[in-house]
Each structure stands twice: as C-alpha cells, then as structure tokens.
Length: 246
Ligand code: NDP
Image 1 (spheres, rainbow, N blue to C red):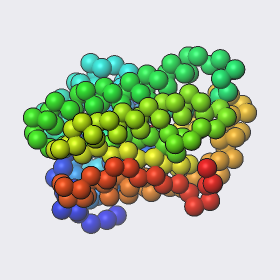
Image 2: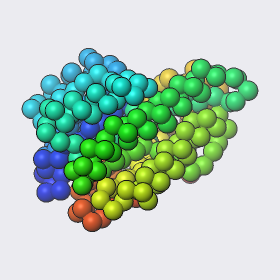
Image 3: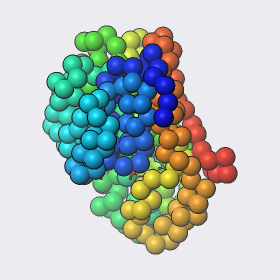
Image 4: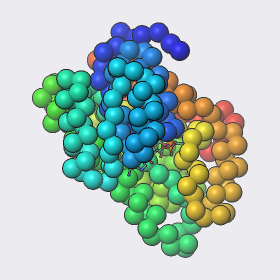
C-alpha cells in the first residue's frame, strides 16, 4: 500500500476500537508503513481476522474500554508482547445521536463511559510508562462535533469537546517529552452511524454521511502525526469531506 517511514518503522502502536472503521484502517496503514500494532476492542472475531491478515507485526487482546482494569491490562499486554509502547491511539467511540428530550439516558451514559472515560483510562494506562521511557505519543479521536454542536448531537458533541479539552490539557502538561495529538474528522464511512437508535436522528446522519470519505483519510492523518520528528507535535488535525459544510 505504501512505503515504510523512518519515524514510524518499528514503533509499537496501541489502537483501541480496532475491530472496524478508523481503528482498522489505521492499523492497516501503520503496519504497511513499518509499525507494530496492538489491537483492542470487544469483537474478538474481527480483531483475530485483522491480526491474521496483518501478520507478525500485529497482535490483539479483547478490551472493553469502560473498564479501567481491562485497559491497563491491554496496554501492559502490548508492552509485554512488543517490548514497549510508543503510541496509543484512543479511538474507541460511539455516536448514538438523539434529541435530549428523547431521554435516551442509557445512551448518554454509554457515550460518556466509552468516549470520555475510555480515553482517560487509555491515558492513565500509558502515561506512567511513557514518562518512564521519556518518550511517547497519545492520539485521541475528537470530531468536528468537538468543535460545533448540532441538534441531536448535544451529548455526543459534549463527549468530543471533552476529548478535545483533555488532550489539549495533556499536551500542555506533558508536552516536554510526550506528544499529544487530536484528530477531528467529519463524516467518514464506517459503522459509526449504524447504531443510531432514534429514527429522525438516523435519517439526519444518513444525509450527512452521503458524502462520507474513506477511513484511510483518517489513517493518513494519524500516520502524518506519528511520522513527524520527535521535536514536532501535530496538535490537531481537522479533516472533513470537501462536500461537508459543517
Ligand atoms: P466504528 O463504529 O466503525 O468503530 C468504533 C470502534 O469502537 C469499534 O471498533 C468498536 O469495537 C469500538 N468500541 C465501541 N465500544 C467499545 C468498548 N466499550 N470497548 C472497546 N471498544 C469499543 O466507528 P469509527 O471507526 O468511525 O469510530 C472511531 C472513532 O472515531 C470514534 O471515537 C468516533 O467517535 C470517531 N469519529 C468518527 C467519525 C466518523 O464519521 N466515522 C467522525 C469523527 C470522529 P467493538 O464494538 O468490537 O468493541
């Protein structure tokens, strides 16, 4: 697919939400560029198939990012398997859009648990190790919904604003030696909108996603951030379909 990059080759990249979509596309691209990837999500079959496809430079462990213990074990297992952890891509996330007055409180809680707490657990699991190494890179998936709010996206946007703030705070606090990057995509063609349970919100998302771009567009952005020399931290990349207005 692509050539090895000197700043990516050999790096150990831990990716949550690697069983589909952006996580899978990122794993495929980074392995093609010479990285070793450790894949996590809940759907073991998908992880196994992807790891088999990618060969010796990929391994996986089932992880539910709503469990702090599981996320710690997952990051520790990556270090055990490959000897170190250079990059964590906190990518796992959900987008069950709905208007607030539909009171889908269970979905609000799941979004907070996966999109916010899952990211925090990923940071907690990797940061001490990276500080000990004196090197590391934490990448999180915010969204254009982390920059603007639309009807039906109040809670999802809230989680993505939080991810933005947490990652920017992380960069300011540990930026001396550890890089932090926010990736904020618009509509990208993945399974993400498929789990919207509110009919009107689903129709709105279908319209927005009619112009969705390929998941490799985000994988290229993540690769670009990792590929920079150590003294360059790409703070954020915002990318959308050319045809997407907001
Ligand atoms: P997908 O639905 O294809 O992927 C989501 C991933 O998250 C899956 O691998 C899923 O795996 C994983 N996941 C969900 N819940 C958990 C959990 N509790 N524990 C572990 N893993 C979990 O969507 P995308 O690839 O599009 O989404 C990836 C990220 O990108 C999300 O954070 C999303 O908000 C963000 N994003 C996506 C955009 C888009 O348009 N596609 C735009 C902007 C941001 P499993 O079900 O196997 O656990």
